[in-house]
Length: 264
Ligand code: LHQ
Image 1 (cartoon, rainbow, N blue to C red):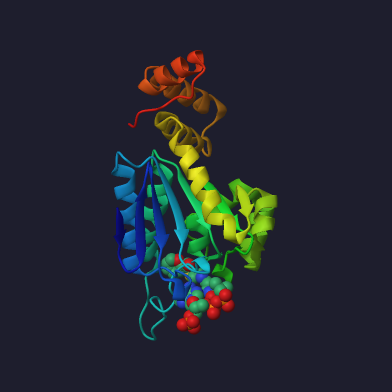
Image 2: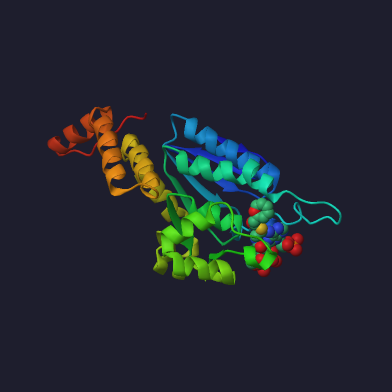
C-alpha cells in the first residue's frame, strides 16, 4: 500500500517500508510539515509488525539540503529560537532512528547538507550515489553543528577529519566519505535504488531480535566502558538465547537450511 502526502512518500513493500523525502524542487530541504511527516512515517514503520527494515531516500537530484532556510529566515527585530526547532523537530527524528529496534538503510541519492547530511549519518547503513556530496554547511551560515553531526562524525571518521570538514564546510564526495568510513558503500547513480533495495530485502531475512540487539549494543558502546559493554552483551545474549529467533536460527543451521525468522 502506498501512502502519499505532499512532502513525504511512504511505500510499504514485503517486509520493509520505503520513506522518500519529497520536495525535489528544493532538494528536499526540511520544513516543519516535512519533519512532522517524516517522524510519523518512521514511527508508523517501527510500530508496523509487517515492517522489519526502513529504507530512507530523497526524491529528485538531492537527498536533503537541511533546514529550509526560507522557513527560518532571520526577521529584523525578532530573536529566532533554532534550539526549539531542533528539540521539537530534528532531535526526535534522530532519536527515533537511533532508538528503533529495526535497521534504517539510507540511500543518499544526491547532495546531503546541514541537518540533511546528519539525518543520513544517523541511519544504520548508508549507501550513496557516486554523485552525492555531504556538506557540513553550518559554518557558512553562522551556525553550530546539529542533528547529531558532532556526535556521529568523530565516531565515524575520527576527530581530525570531523573537525576539519565542519570548520571548513567543504563538500565531501561520496567516494571520499566511503574512503573515510563515513558511509557503507558508493554506488553508480542508476544502480543506487536497486542496490539499496536489495540490501534492505536481505536485512528483512535476518533475525529481527538480532537487529534489535545489534542496534542497542552499538548505540551503547559509544559511551560504555569495556566492562559495561561486556555486561550489556551478556544481558542481550541471555534474552537472545531464550528467543524464538535463536531456536529457528540454530535448528535451520543444523538442518542445513536457510532460517525463516518470524517477526517480533
Ligand atoms: C533550498 C535549500 C535550503 C531552502 C537548496 N533551504 N531552499 C538550521 C536551522 C534550524 C534548525 C535545524 O538545522 C539547521 C541546520 C541546517 O540544516 S541549515 C541548512 C543547511 N543547508 C545548506 O546550507 C544548504 C543550502 N543549499 C546549498 O548550498 C545548495 O543548494 C546545494 C549545495 C545544497 C545544492 O546546490 P545546487 O545543486 O547548485 O542547487 P541550488 O542551489 O540551485 O538549489 C536548488 C533549489 O533548492 C533552489 O531553489 P530555486 O527555487 O532557486 O530553484 C534552492 O534555493 C533550493 N534550496 N537548499 N536549505
